[in-house]
Length: 298
Image 1 (cartoon, rainbow, N blue to C red):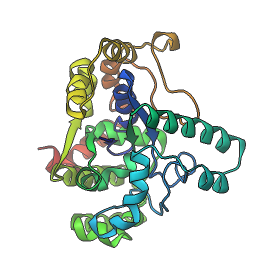
Image 2: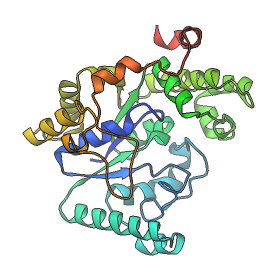
Image 3: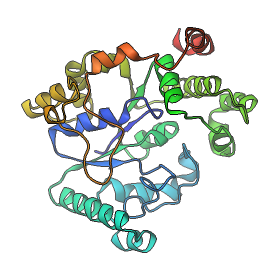
């Protein structure tokens, strides 16, 4: 059974995905629904046309997505479409890496692990239609907004609002219209967090997991996720997770991302990382985020 790790960007999906893959037996697939190339727009990995960030997939448009994701889940790599679409040295190296991983994974009966924050609003479809074990990360809103502020990120709500099926199924997103074109990045990030948290809270068939709880107790937390995903909890997995979540910056102390599909994950002391959660926000901004998200955190 395929595993999907999702949640808004900067909610710990890359970290969680890498920790789940620490025990072996999984082929890690990085953000197939990301509309930016790279890591997205790679038809060898996902032969479908991604047109929006947070592309919404549901039963009504399932025919456009199910065959492509079934191929991805079955680790069937499409070499010719990838070669036709992408010919740079980076793309060729990435094709070799993914093509090899998919082929060996299929031959050795490994499972696909999709790490994709852009699937967060479609988590229900992945659980019910594709049959994934879905783990959805939710980060504390102050920590989430502060992370976006430090990176200078914002969200363009028109990419959500111009998807009719998404607005139909989640009409609370219409409230975001008031912030279209706004330069208030704090308010926009908080509104995205609140809307997404509400949607996840009522999505059946998924496991919603607190990033903070996982970071505070990574070994018991990931052992619970291993059980949920049907992964064997081994001494190898425990050792690698322990090392990767207590790292002090020494690359030799733990394993990290590598290769041509790198993620945002770095070895870290996960407990200490929580101490700087609000870095980048003023005390007034912290209080404001708490007010803006109070309905979803009560």
